[in-house]
Image 1 (tube, one colour):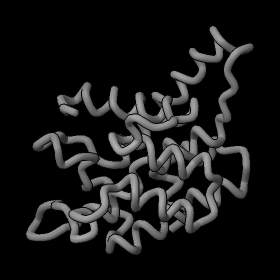
Image 2 (cartoon, helix red, strand yellow; image 1 turned 180 degrees about the vertical axis):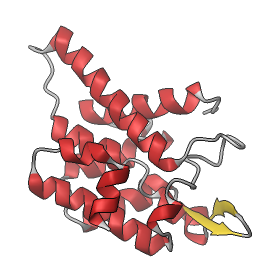
Image 3 (spheres, rainbow, N blue to C red; image 1 turned 90 degrees about the vertical axis):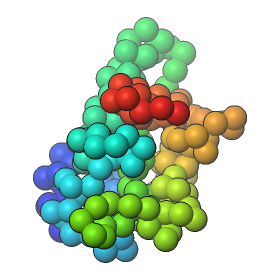
Length: 179
């Protein structure tokens, strides 16, 4: 399954730290299994249930957020490189995993994707950060997953977490999503 995940999310190959790369893949593998999905399902799962018939799947959204975050970080460093430090490996891991909890939040039944029993109790920032923690990802990555959505509002966000948060919301709102 590792190779299939890398095929779907080629940005994984941009992570320089081999241990971090393996952990990102292991989180995706477990989320797929735990959620009862198959690898071929990932392109059929909508990235959100809040935009009816949005037409963007979880993989497209994950890649768009990751690439948006990388570009944002490059611009920030271009102008503020002496004032800001951004860890690109951590940023990549956070972007690639920010919505992995949706594989537990959603379920497939009767030909459509709905909230799962778990999803009714725990939104994806909670389940995703729990998976990342379980697989030994750095606290900084767990933090990005936990704080990328509204659950992180009003609290501390690292520079990488802020970038993932805004990259996620610009992608969500540009497609008509309302916060």
